[in-house]
Length: 173
Image (cartoon, rainbow, N blue to C red; front, side):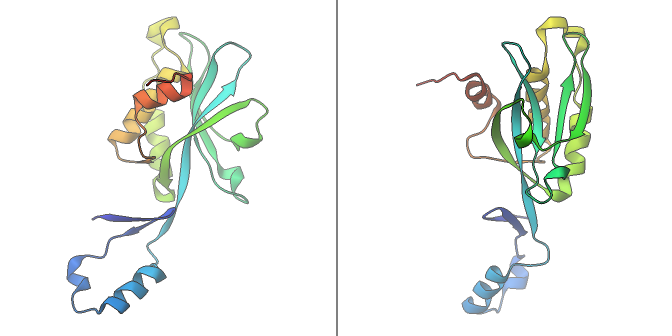
């Protein structure tokens, strides 16, 4: 089934067979009225936090708007080279004293948030890589798995190379 994009809401496309015989005014009114099948999209970010070192801590962050911000959540790994562990927590990153940057990568429907968490939880934590692998690598691995599973709707132009350039502050011509 196709999906129509309308602002920050998605609506399943009307199957062509149900569209026959309707006059254009009736079709327009139905489109403007929406349907019970609509849902809000939640923004998905890569959150960068200050951690007292040269490097920033990266996490995936799904944000809910006020007054539901307490149900926002972060998926990430914590620890240090060779000793990372996956964790999820409810957190409204905008109120964190350590937040450095929120970089929006896409949108997710409310109905896919549980699958988002499951996918993040299944991303391999590569402690076998020692100091050569960290939270930034994990975020990129998780991003690619979420894209492969079609769980998030990407912001135009976002891909893993573009994320690396943006997050590292590299400007290319």
